[in-house]
Amino acid sequence: MKSFLRATTALAGVVIAGSAFAADLPRRAAPPVFVPVPVFTWTGAYFGINAGYAFNTGSEGTRSFVVPGAFTNSGVAQTATFSKNDQNGFTGGAQIGYNYQFTPGSGVVVGVEADAQYLDFGAKRRDSGILAAPGLVINDPRGLSSLDYFGTVRGRLGYAFDRTLVYGTGGFAYGAGSAERDFGGFRGNDDFRTGYAVGGGIEYALPTDSFFNFFKSSAVTLKVEGLYVNLDRGNRSTGALVVNTATGDVVRSVSTGRRDDEFAVVRAGLNYKFGTY
Image 1 (cartoon, rainbow, N blue to C red):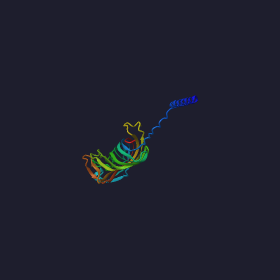
Image 2 (cartoon, helix red, strand yellow):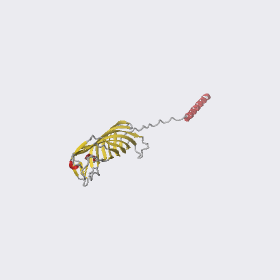
Image 3 (cartoon, helix red, strand yellow):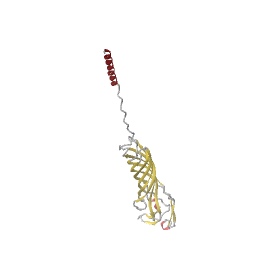
Image 4 (cartoon, rainbow, N blue to C red):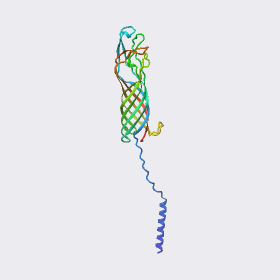
């Protein structure tokens, strides 16, 4: 009996000691909570600025007009020849738009964008080289206009490779300029024109914590874009060839026919995107 009690007591001691040892062991940590990495999407509204260079792409070439002797200093009819006048210059402005991406990460992106641009296409006179009769000046009417600004409202369609977007664009374009203000007293009004613009570009989204993110937007994007712009100036049946320097009256008109303002724009831009990351 005593032997049984001693065995029971020893077994109880072993159980108690084992429980105390188990209590000293480290507990198994809970598995970490899975947090998915956000997938970038181009969906959202944006605004930004741009700057670049524009250059004339029209096919207008050399053109000649016969100037009657009554308007030349010699009194003899002469042919006035005017060569093509290329225009180019700085352009800069701002844009606003909205994109929608069908699948986050990589996928098709559609959007719409509107922009307004300053354009340094100054007016340039093209002298004929003919000595005009006293009180008159001879110039090419095609050289009297300039473009001071233009803008577009375009659709965009592209494909996103995560933070890189390649896209094409096209839509409505408008612009205006003014007639030459120093042409023997000749005065012209602003000339509003409409047409279309097509082009394409590539855009890249910087990280949210980018140095450029002054507005705490969901992303800052950089883009390089090219556009072809065609503004219809309509059918011009007359133009000033000979102008009275004293009164500004047109004393001789010529038919200039239809003309479009065609130019290309290469520009870089910066956008601030708001909305979904």
